[in-house]
Image 1 (tube, rainbow, N blue to C red):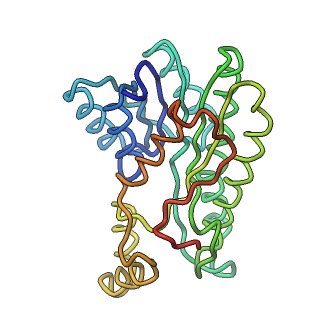
Image 2 (cartoon, rainbow, N blue to C red):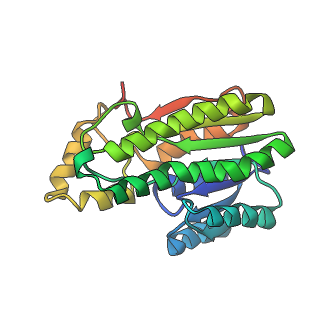
Length: 252
């Protein structure tokens, strides 16, 4: 029970890395505020955790909107009485080179992948400062460390997440607030499956994704969740400002 007594907000919780992390954190004793735009998937997750004997609440909301973020944080504290961990995991992927990326796509990517973290941290950090402790984990990407083609908006936003993480870690290191980030490689998630359908040949596209992995396979959401668990647990009490790659060697 490495997270016994802790309360965690996890964004993008309905599927993939967010879902796997929510289930694992709950198994380790954390109370979970599961946040996602996918109301049905989010509620199914919370129900699964409750059935297993854990504590969870599903909160639907758009983390790129300040009003929703304020409500999410307020409802979490009203439901559980406290807050210890913020896992900024919600994200979106847009394909394309810069001349192919519309302004709307650029703005949407930035809003979901970066602005959401600003909004949530802006609301949560004062709570952590008041109580004298807290942990923030942000999801970046291996593409922030090694460029790939046709991902300019996504890679730019995920590079910003690394800079945000390091800046916040330094700003709050004296306040017992730790801030770290994960850089997952290509992970076999529903999001990836959906993106593959946009290719003319999804099977061939998946093969190309696998072929670029030094380990010869895609990662799993559960593998990333294990890394997330370490970084939010007290076992990582001496770890802040780190960028942890979980990418099968992709960014070497």
